[in-house]
Length: 357
Image 1 (spheres, rainbow, N blue to C red):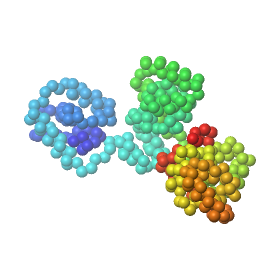
Image 2 (spheres, rainbow, N blue to C red):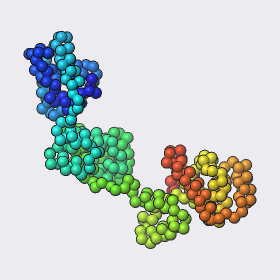
Image 3 (spheres, rainbow, N blue to C red):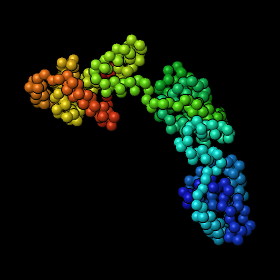
Image 4 (cartoon, one colour):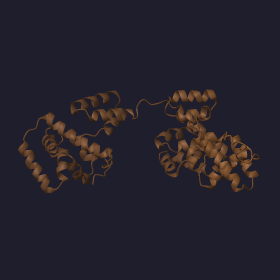
């Protein structure tokens, strides 16, 4: 029954006819009967979505009532059900409800302007929205807030998320915020609500991003798919223009040459099972001439001895491989590794890490 009744329609509950239910009952009393019945049946009714004055009126009405006989209950429920069944379509109540219904369908700028013009509060519970955000989005806001606000923020967020944020702060700031948490016992719910609204407004005030990923990731992805000559030439140019950016891009790039430092030895056999045998042979046969002898040795040293010996013989028999063919084969090996990483079947080792066992 709860799924049939949008809470917006509870504000003016269906107009019960006096000749159906007892005429002595007011519409407010009938509303209280319906709500009480739904609560008894375990329905989750979002009464907090009603305006404050209606919540208050409903509470007073329920507090003034005692017993309702079965006949009266049946009559009220029957009228309520009849009224609901006669509804063909319902619209949200007011501009706030309309904006909620159109969330994601109209532009964010238009929604913000309409809320501002109508004086509509943008969030019901701002903390519910904040709890769904990632640490990456919340960290810049946390870093720019006062210690007191940061303490409230961490206190309201889920523990794992709060711990993640705290771990990314500098030690002195993290210690001050942690101590400030111990002083939040006297903070009022109203103050917590205002802080939540302020934080949510800051997040929405940030300009919309045209790209989902940062510049380093985008350039890295492009260079990953470029040939070696183009990649080296671009990185050389970036070194001359912005060495810091160039170094960050290098860390985002994964090429055939990165295999010995980014792949754990134990993962080599799993990767080779996914690489087409012809591509593997061509890549290894052309590796030394392309300056990737270390990668070839790393791969051969971390597979079964019999398979490595067979590959060495095949490499000798293959002779000289065209550079273009070798590059294409190496790109295929890298593509397989990237695909395994994107599906969660492989974890790349951080370049500065020693975890290559």
